[in-house]
Amino acid sequence: MNQSLLPAAGTDWLRNGEATARLALSCLDLTSLNDADTEADIAALCARAQGPCGPVAAVCVWPRLAAFARKQLPTSIAVAAVANFPDGSADLERVLRETGQIVQSGAQEVDLVLPYAQLLQGNEAVVAGLLATVRKASAGLRLKVILETGILVGADYILRAAQLSLEAGADFLKTSTGKTAISATPEAARTMLLAIAADPGAAQRVGFKPSGGIRTVADAAVFIALTEEILGREALNAQRFRIGASSVLADIEAVLAGQGPVPIKPSAGY
Image (tube, helix red, strand yellow):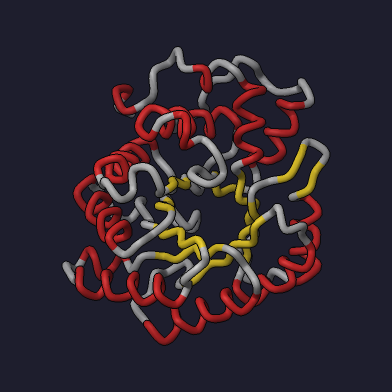
């Protein structure tokens, strides 16, 4: 790990576990995307989203379960559903079908996988066209574009994926599906955050969502600190920052109950 890519070690988010846990909870997308998920699974997820320490920002589910999730939650907790997930297919018919299902479900957010294989093959027009089509089809909903940075190896590909997403009107850039060997990393996060900051139309509007492999409050602290460093403290709210994870909730609750390590240290890999 290149230590220069990490936020300053003295930052508050790397020292104050309780404050970090509270922010992480308020910005958490509690997620269940198992192939065999049932309504019973999502009912349990939605109950978990309204835990004793407070509510999460959103729950993220398959399109077929989005309407059910919406009925289980108060309006203060958003419902997100995935499209083109997890493979990032360039099949427009499929992505429009899934996006339409999300819109009709009453969900508030679409987490779309950018067709990363097309980008790697140099087919930027295909990528741009799909992003624009989904943006139009999901008008009025928050569009979070998943770049799958663990496959887009190298800052140049990640930067270009971010730029194409911003040009299409994305509301959030998200690192990963969580279904690949490499998920969120500080290197990818920095590249994506700098792309947002460099775009005049995005710098004060677009959010960032690290997703995959974030299991502890300490892991979350790295991405919170990077976001503050590049986009400013005003970006640290659920409108501009999300964490895509489920396993981290147990550690958040442990820290808030006084059972977690404070001060905190990022785990291996961060």
